[in-house]
Structures are given as structure tokens and as C-alpha cells.
Picture 1 (tube, protein in one colour):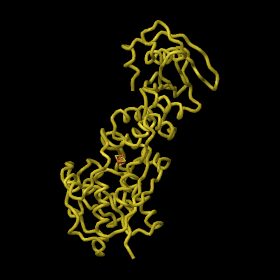
Picture 2 (cartoon, helix red, strand yellow):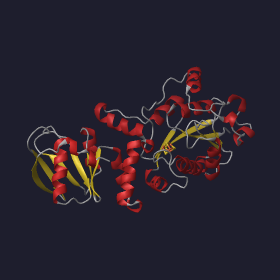
Picture 3 (cartoon, helix red, strand yellow):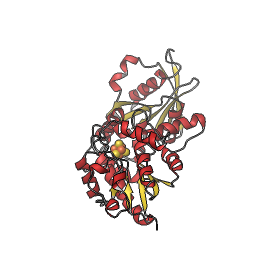
Picture 4 (tube, helix red, strand yellow):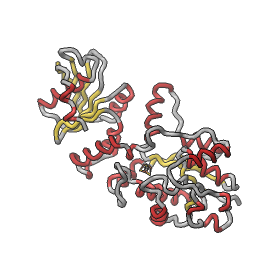
Length: 342
Ligand code: SF4
């Protein structure tokens, strides 16, 4: 009977290579891709989809090229607790990388039993990432996920202790690698040798949680809303638009383009909205309950980002509980905006 392994597959270079290396040793591989809801690449592709109508997950594309099945598993709801209460803390922004890896690998461990797989493959490279890929951290993650010696990292395996698949002779250690560090040159050479030409190369990082602007918005949300009141929907709204804090109790998000306006419409059920009436402009959604002067300020910010920014007055529609009201406001002076920006 063929030995089977589960691979954590993102569709990027490292995980694609890791699968190829193991598959070439005669192991049956099945890919799993956990969707946390914070994948930057996926988010950008989703927006691009609205322009060209095509959107295929990178892990699925990679799986197709490698000739393996891939399961996309949505873990976004359970991930909320990992993000809000990480045992091992955050990286340089709000990335709980150690807890994130432990969480995913625990889920993978459960799937191993279900799918009759004997070990796990990851594309991790020793010392490639500052938080989760130091040698000692890799051991910690392995121990906490209950997968001691059952995680094979083909790209760095020769720098790590022998795993059970190697010990049992399912995998030939001589055909594994000793890559470490941040440089991608070894992986690119390997990809070339193995004929792997297509893989995802996300520009500007792959995870919202490592993004500085997202982190600022996240910290603002925690500070003013309180960790215990934060919902998945609140976090979804941190991904798009321009964010302004109007007061301790009120924050607004202004869409930057048509795609973001559509996104904000989708995730703003029950929230107050501001829209321009007879000219092109953004949707502004309000998290909170603005008082009178704040209502005018929000309308003036909405007007500033509309095609009427140089007009004396712009008509803005305020939509609250399915009731609408038309306001006539002067667009806000741009110089006054920065003090509200998150
Ligand atoms: S960057 Fe960190 S938090 Fe984001 S998916 Fe990767 S391991 Fe998880």
C-alpha cells in the first residue's frame, strides 16, 4: 500500500517544491489549504476577479500542476480566538505566527486520521521567517501540535533531526535538502531543475496580519471596542478603505474604489451609511453612533472623496435603519483630515 502524506500547500514556491520532492519519492500526497480569512493574495485576487471574471485559488492551481488533490478548508471563524488571544504573542505587527502554525497543524493532525495519512509535509525553511521558523520554534510548534517527528520539511530536513517517515524508510533523507535563511536562490535553482515554472509570488507579503496598516487598525479596534466585543465582521472591515476615528465611540471607513464600495456594502449590515447623491463618490460606513456635529463631519469627509470635492456643497445621503435623509455639506478641508486618520 502506498504511504500517504498531507501537505500544507499555499501555492507558493516553498510548499510547491516540498510536495514535488516528496511526491518524487513515490509518496501519495494530498494538499490542504487553510483559509484564515487574512490571506492578502486571495483578497487582491478576489478584487481583480470583479474586473476579469476569473479567480482560482493558488493552492488549487499548484495542486493541479503537481497532479494532487487539494482541500480548501475555511478556518476563519475558529481563527478569531487564535488572533485575539495568542499564547505566544505577536510578531512585528499583529501576526500570531507561532499560534497560527500550531492551530493549523493541529487541524492537519485531525485530518491525518480522517484521510489515513502517515505524516505531514510543509514548505517551511529554517530561519526564513523571524518568528515561526527558528529551529527552536519549529520544535516547539511540533510539540504543541502533537506531531513530534511527524512533520517533514523537505527543504530544510537535513538541518533538522530525522523524522519518522525517514526513519521508517518511506523517505530517503539523502534526497532532501539543507536550505536555510531568507534568500530564495536555492529554491529558484531547484524549481528550475525540477521544471516548476509557475507558482504564486505575492507582492507585498501574503498575510494581512503582517501588514503595518492593518496592525494599526487592529490595535485601534481593540483599544476602543474591547477584545471581548470584536467579531469576525469587525475584522473583515479592517481590510479595506480609509479608516478615520471620529470619537471614542465612532469610527468610519471610506471606500477607495468601486470594488471596496461593493465590499463595504456586503459587510455593513445594520451600520449607518453615507453616499453621494448625484455625483460619483465613495460609500462611507459608520461603526458607532455619531452625534449631530459628527454626522456633518462624516458627510463632509464623504464629500471630500467624491467628484464634488472642489464644489461649495455636495448632497450626501445618510442611510440609517432603512430610513434616508439628504444632507447638504461643504467638503472637508483636506488639511483637517490627518488628525482623524487611523
Ligand atoms: S504570516 Fe503568520 S499569521 Fe499569517 S498565515 Fe503565516 S503563520 Fe499565520
